[in-house]
Image: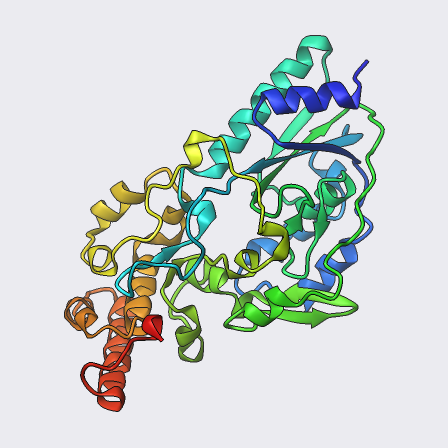
Length: 358
């Protein structure tokens, strides 16, 4: 016999600050996901719109014997400055979730320990899901009482904030489900108003993120060239974006992680250092972190865009080298960056302040 409190205590021992239970049945808000994909908001992320979309309708398509979903959350927030708080405009920005070790590995290891501990008291079938499985994880986390889904589409916990990784364990055990908390965003629009690319758009009675406008999508998921009209909005982001979470009032006193594997490796690296990386150096620098997902060509494309947005004429030299790259998309974005910096110098004149100084 398993009691939810015992499961929560075991989850805490395995490194999870949040734990709750949802029933392994189709989520009541699954229609929102269908509407999101039909609106084209998934962009080129075909893994969200292909045959796996049908699997997302029902968790029992992942584990036929599933009766319950144990949802866990792990804080990844580290005590570092907010987005844009760089020492100067020569530095890039990497999204907070990618500062340390790859969360997929950290989360899966913790959930594996949790399953092993629970199976000491009785056998059951299970399946561990960490982000990559076709499962509406935020929907089930909400149903399990871990938080509500904010206007920025992040799960927000009233006590801990939104800097939380989510994971799910589908189980053949029948457990009493928890209840979802109330939505506490109220009339707040800070995330909507702060988004530089206006990616948080009205959707029915609420809001959704149009991935095609989102900095995270453009710097991580999109292959090929970034649409020219979107580039300026990226600022100096080279991998992901945290703006909508940085401005969220529920993150003013957000919890800080105690997980050493999430300690920052590269929070705001120098742009010229990144521009000079060989492919092997890129792999070595970001091995074992989420940044590797951008791939070498995509990452240099992002770096070239960030240098063009820096407003710093010192970036012209590194950009000119990238403009000679054999990787077409990198060379094209470097040329765009050069043109942007030269236009800025012409319009502002020597000695003018950069954006970061105004």
